[in-house]
Image (tube, rainbow, N blue to C red):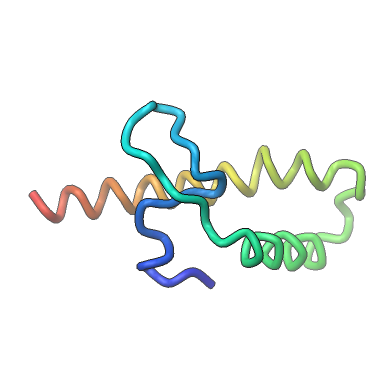
Length: 78
């Protein structure tokens, strides 16, 4: 859903926990679409838990993937 250019230097929130280089947020409309698709595919997640699952599982996984991509990309440039 996100092109490599859209992923570069970004994460879900646009914030960096390490205080390092500034990041930009991913397109929020696309993230909302992903969230809707996920909970359509997993309807057993109760509505009251969806926001928690989204933040604790999905956002963490997306951000981890993007961090890994930045790390791999930086290693290739060396």
